[in-house]
Image (tube, rainbow, N blue to C red; front, side, top):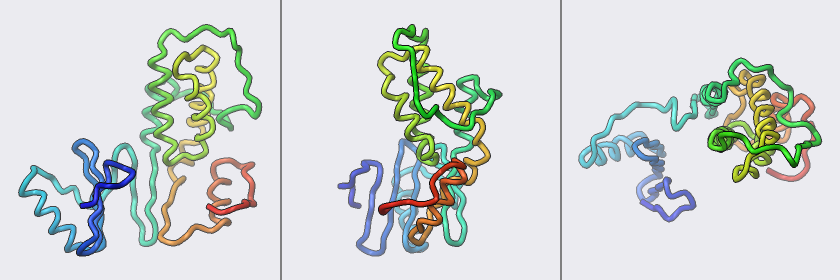
Length: 206
């Protein structure tokens, strides 16, 4: 298998058909171009390691995965709820946007008592952006202050969490990986589900 790839957890074999393996600690995801090939590969691995075949994928590393005839749907709605629960924001008042258009913070605000909580929640939000690209800018902004988070920056994180609370239902239908190239119209529709004011015209390629 070829492990000379940008992701050290990804292994690809393409001599007799194509097979890809993603390994993270003791979780493994296996896909290929032939059912016969994957069955054979599992049998080979089972001779060397104790394994349990869980069948078609439904969950992997906090990501909920559902398959249709022409797409793969990814969701982290349950993971998002755990973030809200960990930050005691599960029953907070929702917000319609993750950050204000013009962010202002008090530069002389005191440091928060437990900076590890800030880093933990922001780190979890960074992983959530895998299926919530609408959070990317806001989370990237607050992640710049991990070294010395203040009360003002924590309030920004709380606003992001309030937005997350208000968009949990949208998170259930956010990302679909299509087997054919996505059109600009489909991309515009995707963003309009998340942010009502999102532009319907896009320039450039994706």
